Image (tube, rainbow, N blue to C red; front, side, top):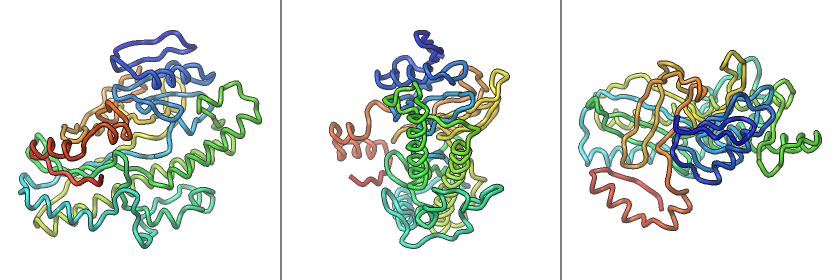
Length: 351
């Protein structure tokens, strides 16, 4: 931990030397919520989000905050170690072309729905009991096994163990977006009815965990977490199939998977609390995690230290110096691609 801010109702514990003003203001809002537990933890890669900073961790008592999970519910990482130790540049280009033929990128979906058997099973309920998921289910079948845009990626990496690794960063696509927006709007409406003293400008409307709306959100949120994993798993299987076609024989170790956008009931400081991780990786003692780099920098497999002050959490990525829209305005795509190419890194970007 680098710094503690003690000016608000609860402390803000920072694991970074500097934080942008907007993200710090959002952290201050979190620290003044009446139901926040102990303190707010801000990870090293924190930056401005909606309501809560990306890279924020908040534990709450009796309440869940949809915007403290975010719109890409279940977004996370998966990685697979292969038996390969070398792949030629020409073969890499063929692999990338094969991946593009198997995995829709950006806003693209499959033209036909994938098999329903690949979708998550609903524990104790049926899909019909999940109002948003049931409404979006058929659309979700076309989103299963698709990457999405933003900072989501599929990478072929060389590990310091000498092996070739596959890594994917993706989330719950439009399904998670729909669930998040529905319950955030519902929370906003209910907070107005209750005459909540929390300013709507904070974008931190809440739902009581014990209420019907709170329980429905948690059920649908958990389904989206499982859908995001199913999405990454299907993409990984199709990437593996491309490698097998071009490089047989090749073998794969079991998939490593983590989510970094969700809320879960956990025990901290002897209390049962709802831990919201928005762009944060759970890091219980000995737990395996993935922290991806930015383009052209290493990604890391890590094991948690069980740091209680971070609510057993760590960063979820390399962080950023500017937002994507700012980068599009200020950076030259061809120049950035040449920089990577000069390092021997092959890229495949849309503008």
